[in-house]
Image (cartoon, rainbow, N blue to C red; front, side):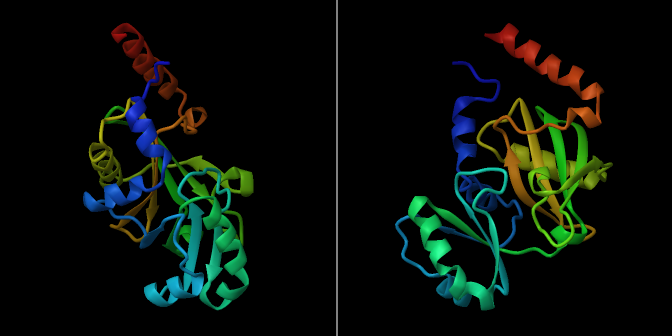
Length: 213
């Protein structure tokens, strides 16, 4: 069955280990360890080895913050069973928690090809770190700097193929530094309701694709 984004690109994007590939290409991501399913490493060992005071764990394959938890180093013993249960089901990311997510929010940049279209900012509800609206997060129109737009474009160019459409989720760690949280290429929310003209741009992309097949 044909897909708008190339199937090999979708398969690559399905597993969050794509973040490792992008990191190796020079893309900045939060400090992260990629733990394979067959690993027997404990949370305590991971905290000791990384020196993290606070960490996020999430599965290689998943979405909407499912099986995603924030764990403080002192609480790691009580989370060990959860960690091992998650690891029994698949590989996991052990990622340093970035406090900026709670006061800066996460910006989502939408691109059609390498062309920037629009952006939104997602914020977690008070006391949470998950920006998804499933967990009480909010979304608003956002006007990114040219610097942020260019960072998003450069990230797209590091993917194995240029996608027809993409959402680049960035964390503004400070005024100049942006960390890639996710590169969304598999039917992501494109937030076109916040930028109605973007629907026409997307229709043009789809039209060109149909003509080409």
